[in-house]
Image (cartoon, rainbow, N blue to C red; front, side, top):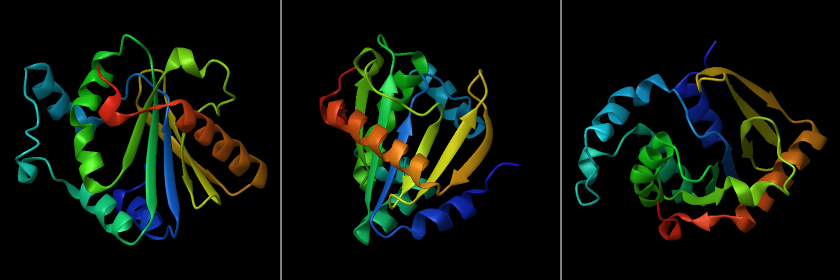
Length: 174
């Protein structure tokens, strides 16, 4: 069963210090993105000056959480040249940054010497890990959570290693 957006929002809102997210896939088949991805393929791009046209519930949540002092960071490990999906994702990442998220990109070839978990994850306050498990076609399968100290440490170490090597969004050109 998919985790509802409201339960995830409640989890994010419960964070006191930090929420970090590691993404490692070059393609996500997220049904809520189908329309936007198709429009992007036809040449549509979000206008940074027209915030009302792209502000959405996720960005409200990011702004709400970062306004109370929580640091939200996202690191993306990507193949180069980037997939069509990653180029699409990069094109609207400025919206996440505008809401208060810090985002960096790490070319996959620079991650070869890092020990990484097998799935994307969120790490909340260095105490809870939520793994997002996807199938081979990029469709979400399930979410697993743990507070096992060894897993929390693995994910914290992995995220920090990626973050240190990664390129800030405003400097990563596709």
